[in-house]
View 1 (cartoon, rainbow, N blue to C red):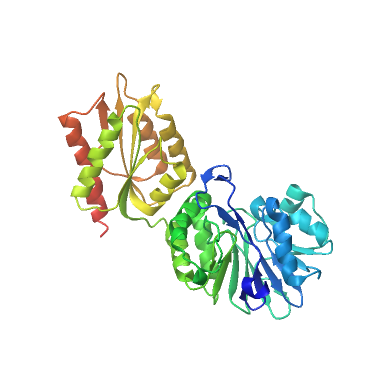
View 2 (tube, rainbow, N blue to C red):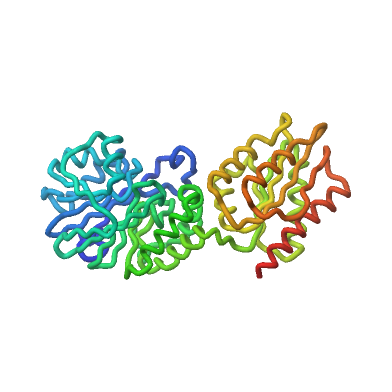
Length: 398
């Protein structure tokens, strides 16, 4: 068991997979499941880095004991207090009553608040070391990636970065857990979706963390979700760097809410013109069908965004209104925005989207299009003009 779960040096993988949960945080679909990663350092002093969701404690404990037997664990290092990682903390404390919990000032307030756990604590600050014997650890505080207590632990001996939720991705680890032993294709889009929905609001904090870690000789990234990254760690860091700088690719996301299909025809006409203008990445999302997590991921991925809504009870179509609030929460930057709307007897959708445009601070492109009842020749021309304006703006960045 030891050799099968070994990462480098005396570091072992003891995480678990969740193929049961439908929604992460009660919000985000998990078509490929999710892993909760924990790591064990079997040194002169034994350290456990993060725990797992409490539902999987028995499996978790078995994995730990298969490596260290009945020997005690000296340290529990808490990089992140979200319950999918800290959930087994109180049970670990029951099995290892003399364990020392390692965290920062923000950590310990949450430990007591969530679990009422007290006892031996090692309070660390940024840059503090911890000597386990062969492995020499150093701690780096990374607040708001994506909670205030988040930190990362660097193993200076083997170059392993225990990164908490940083560099995470949705998806279970099916057999292998190291990137070199598995097909990682499914994780790249799921990493973008994970980042944009979970971490996306905190781009500036991620940039500060990347700067803090930039001089470290990292060989391996051990996140709390997704694979252990070795061969492809540079690609992982690049994705997080690019997303946290809001550097979208050339492309357009067209999102619309429609009841009877007329607003959808506006979206189709806009998309056709964007394609005719030479923009290849065009993604359409009907809010009645696409889950917001996939829409948000695409908005993080591409620079152009065009939103359309039918007027509904003199307001925006409800699912469009909900999506706009999710976009604003993430405080995104560097996006080009166009919008369109439709109505039967009283125009309201455009007025509401104008308010969103001001709040978002996105660069407005083209003239908003308002349609009464259904498409006519003038509406087709106006939609084509909006699509053309977006395509021209994107091509200016080439």
